[in-house]
Image (cartoon, rainbow, N blue to C red; front, side, top):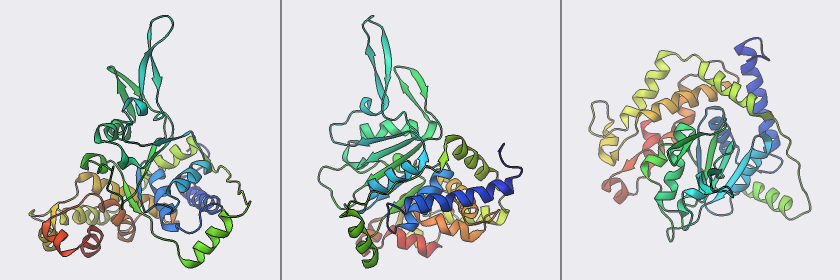
Length: 321
């Protein structure tokens, strides 16, 4: 990083920027500290996030507020049953000279809010797959790169089943984190009601711009990791794979499928970022554990026994930890 004399100085700047971001987001969002931490961890780790929660928990407002605190382009896509892939990536149209030219869709932005992503059929959900993995879209045989940094922050309502389409496993695996939002506490809800029923209009200041975010993303990748931390992360993922040599007995009993190698990669990158955000210069096993549940939550498939006994995926992950 040009503006810092060393990675240590840059790491201190990242930790300071993280605290400043939390302060700006806190002007609008009451509570949800863990959710904010995880979303910002994903941003600095070049990852995408899926936010799952019942209506009214400010999932959309949280993402919009985070976008307001970052000097990046932002587009919101409201997913509906009649949404088409071309409505997301764009399409070729004919101009007055009868020549075809590409009109970019809303996916061409730094931050994409995919609102209620499970309300559109898998065909349209899949329009995001290439963008999330390759940071580009292909239309009519032509590849169009996306501006960096690029994040997809999606929301999903877990309680409504009518008119919804479960996300394909391949799409779920593209999300670094599956973040569950809970109800606010009594004191937090008092603050929410007071703030949102008055004429109070907080101003969120922009903390980081695109070049700074990319520099911090590169810094996260350069963080050294001890071999025992990598071994712990990979061993944890192998424990989730039923019927394999290193599988945990509990996983073999309750899981149909375990996590793939992408989970191991996310565990290490997430642990690196978590260490930096907490003022450390190298992650330890506790940093892996801090990001394990939201990384593994959507990558494990329970079998009939687990569903019949009412054993949730999160409970299984915590047992494996």
